[in-house]
Amino acid sequence: MCCRRSGAHRGVCTRQPAPAPRVRFAPSPTGFLHLGGLRTALYNYLLAKQRGGAFILRLEDTDRSRLTPGAADDIEDMLEWTGIPPDESRRRGGDYGPYVQSERLHLYSQAASALLETGHAYYCFCSNQRLDLLKRAAQRSGLVPRYDNRCRELRPEQVQQKRSEGVPCVIRFRLDPGAEPFRDLVFGWTRHDPAAEGDPVILKADGFPTYHLASVVDDHAMRVSHVLRGSEWLISTAKHLQLFRALRWTPPAYAHLPLLLNRDGSKLSKRQGDICVQRFREQGVLPETLLDIVTHAGSGFSDNRIGRRLDELVAEFNVAKITTHSALLDLDKLDEFNRVHLQRRIEDEQKCAVLRDELRRQVLHTHGSEISDRTVLEPHYIHRVLQLRKGHVCSLRELLDHTHAFLWIRPRVTRQQLLEVSAEAESIAAAVVQLVASGGSFQSTERLNAEFKLITSRLKHTKYSGAMRVLRLALSAQQQGPSVAEMMLSLGEQEVCVRLQKALEH
Image (cartoon, rainbow, N blue to C red; front, top):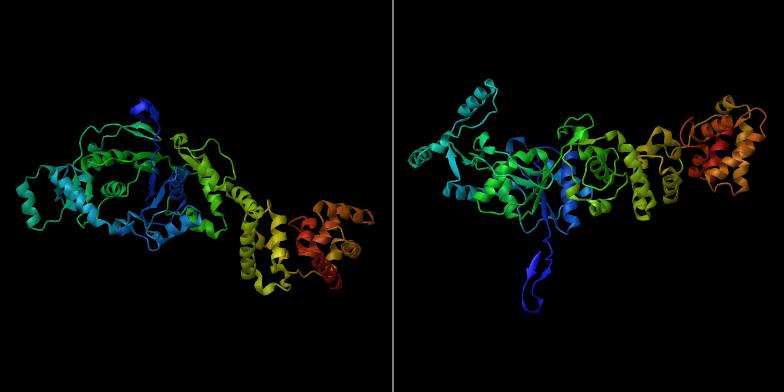
């Protein structure tokens, strides 16, 4: 709020529009994008789009020993596939690049030099062997391992001598004791004294920064206004705020998201191949399903309901409604979520056209050599199948399984097989062929079921259920699957007659 006191408008208060937020998703490409990372990216995206801001993808690849080949591309590929592409990234460019930390080393070196000059940082020459001994001693005593800040006390001439001798060194940040509390947008007022952990390394001997320095430098350089990240980083925030203060920069607002856990309460791990986004994509899970289920598991919205689209998530998202409780992800409900979103796609004309093309491609790939009638590949046929099976199937892949093979492949059924089900099998098949020839019956499953009851009433020894088993066997060579009426509507009048007649001829 800004009050203007000039001229005739003395004392009039005018509300200045808040600047558009700039948020970032900054994963380490040490593994492929998994559901926990997707959720963090999504919440950043929602905040940016709700307020007309920018969503940045920044790759934090300074841990060179753990990089996974292909992970960087996978992360951006999966963000694009799920419908939450970054506005700025390595691939898309932007005014604040490069967007890969290994290409920004000069910025971290400059910041570290500035901290050295002001006395907020110092060179540390402790060997890995000494640090390992400190760690083991602490563990034997039941203490949390920490650096003892030994090199803090080195005199300038000692530092100069060691550097001139080429002794390997890192740069550590000098932490102030008694950190001030800060207000997190999710956890509220929080206080953590990082000095008890010992001064952290901010620039390694190989010239690469640690997370603490790199994230602070990049958030400042990229003008990040809000940092939404996992709650595991909450205790590091005090360090980051001290770094901002030492560099005389204004820090962003922080919001730490509660952990997304497995249903049994265990932590999601990006090393679990079964929770990688790419794996779900391969299984036929829709991108909107993944966005829906990861938000449904947590908080940040007025209510939770299945079936929210991305535009609804953007409109309803509220950082103030994010709770501190960990969210349990129930993947047993994945099929239910996917069924709802698949039905929505089928009911959308443009999206259904895309589904038709994709299903045709999958049918050709799975059943191509067995298809005898190419009619099943026509758009009108596939469209009819999708409309009839919506709400029943959870994915397109389900329409390729054994239960639905009859949709694409004519079954091989003999007269003898039909007669084993009912001695009146020929009469049943003939009655249905006559029904088809009379026209007007293929309007709805209700109309067909009514006709089936009339046919059954004229049979001497076969009940309704027996007649349905005969027809199901003749049409699909199976004894389970969609209802007979739905089978017939899916196949169409001509194909129904062809299959019934072929069964009687054999």
